[in-house]
Length: 209
Length: 209
Image 1 (cartoon, rainbow over the protein chains, first blue to last red):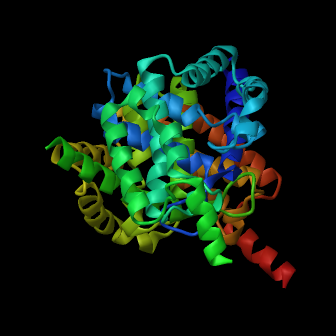
Image 2: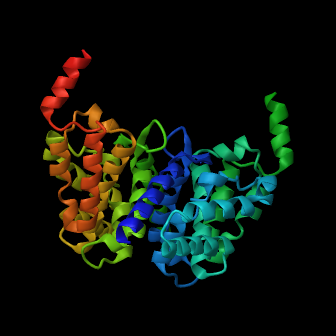
Image 3: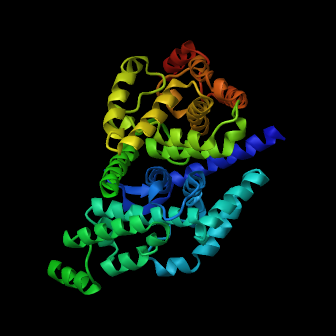
């Protein structure tokens, strides 16, 4: 039984190596290439460790970390859905649920239940841990863009209003980090990394053409 | 005070993004490029989550995970020292201690102490948590090589004896995982991914030339 479990666990650990090949939309901060989901997940777990005092409620750090390490694994099958891709979000849940069943299903039953549960809890954003984890997941790309002079904001024509609307939810997990995020957004607009409105984006395109 | 702390924490979180640019010697399992330290650290934290029952002693999983997330950060300054690089290991400790002081020193004092402590504990391999974490850190490249048909073993002319000597320590953290590692080594030799001896390596080179 123990040996059969170990084979299943190893098959899962080999399978999730694929997370290293799933590209996100933002570049790493110190290099000219897109970030992948595995290194993103590591960075988020480090953010949880360092910023836990910023959570609105007392959180179980181990649970927050587990959630963050696991939350993107479904993207091995379902791919990365860009935060501002409205169409992609229509069938996101269905695609990701199918992926969760297949990938967590590689594990022994008890662990399958635990990881599936962690992923569902993260997605539902109802517990203090899920809210804080989700706040970190939203904050991280802001920091990336601020350091990359708004690289993916520019590429995808994202405006200040879109960024504020999308990230307002950070406050649900951490009022402190939402204040910080607003500072970053403000500084990014000042420096020209982020356009105030869609009209500004169009105007800039005409000037450039 | 809180705001000053947050500035320091953010400076640290931006700095450690560089871990995504530190290349290891083994390739990822599902792709033709070297693995980086950040995704390696994520994979190890996942291994801790999934394989915790394999530890020889009861371990505090949160501590194991923190150690694994943090253990390679010193390589931002000190670089990755290959497991089989005897010369590189001579001044490894000195280079890495200097790096730990600089990088963890970006944090508020209390967190600097915690992370420096976690790194020292991992390096000393004296606690149950450090031993188990270290076992996972040694096992992971074996799994990579087994899946990559011995890619870095071949490139660096590593023999079965070297792999067995280097990895025997896995048993200190987990007898179960050392048994598993020995199986993998055996299968790798059978399949020709790993040479039995240095004489075999030389012979193969002559045949090939």
